[in-house]
Image 1 (cartoon, rainbow, N blue to C red):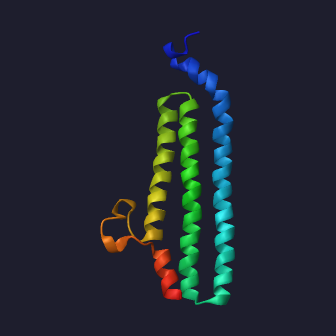
Image 2 (image 1 turned 90 degrees about the horizontal axis):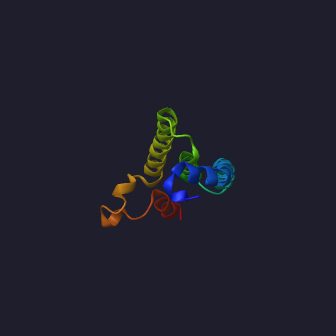
Image 3 (image 1 turned 30 degrees about the vertical axis):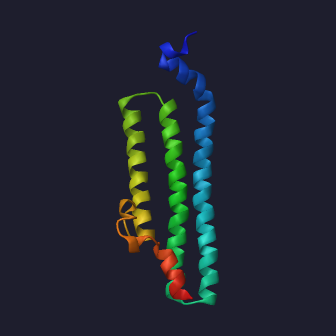
Length: 141
């Protein structure tokens, strides 16, 4: 059998391996989001008792956003793998493309909210190299 001649044969060979990988990544991505929410909430409660409410709230939002952002990145990876093994119909490709587009937009929005600027403007100015979270740490001390 010449695998290079028919791409559907290759997909049929690797689909049984990639399907559980994609499912595992989806589970892991959701788990990362849940752990991020729990860890950020515990940190928020700890910060409430040891500092100001404003700093605790800003740190909570930043840490919550980081957990969600990391989980979304993992879910996007799972979507890309799922695209490889999905039957190629216009509907399935369009649906997966839309999901990736929405998750990517959410990732960019969360990163902008956490860092205070768009991801592509990160190194636009020399004074803009630190995130808002690090600036907040300096203000708190």
